[in-house]
Amino acid sequence: MEKKATYIVFEGMDGSGKTTQSKLLKEFLENQGYSVFLFSEPTDNEVGKLIKSRIVKEKTYSPETLALCFAADRSIFKDEVLLKALKEYEFVIGDRSFFSSLVYQPLMGLDYFWIKELNRFVVKPDITFILDISVEEFMKRRGETDVIFEKKEFQEKLRKAYLELPEKFPKDLFFVINGERKIEEIHEEIKKKVLLYSS
Image (tube, rainbow, N blue to C red):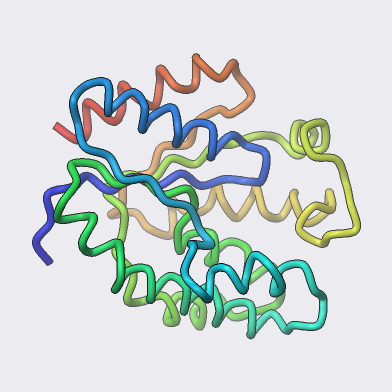
């Protein structure tokens, strides 16, 4: 696939600052004169809307159904939007990616390699930022709820899984960023790395 864009994704626990930092990076790059396309997962196609409106909120769906829906959303988005954006823009920024599936879904009892196979069609990012916060910080920012994803025990396993990603993908470029600092400090570190590694 021919592309001109540098493809960047932000990953990490909920409340780690992914959305904030992806928007700040977009604004910074646009101010530098670059064309930037920003998206988040789940996307806004029909499957993505279904995930956001029903699949995640209702507890009647199996982990397998959830995994298949996320993979379908990702595949449709790639065909309809992402491949075109990678050709037309100088930077494409994703708020979450297939790495989220590889981290979350095995913790729900699914086979890691099955999830990886489901997502074999994805476009891999050029740079992945993992915004790392402690479970204690997560609890301060989000609090514990009845949602399984937001329970302390789950978050402990989730953080560990995120920090293991660079070892599982040694050929890919990851940066683990301390997400407990001031927003501007984090942004400064991210934009320096983007300018250095995308040039």
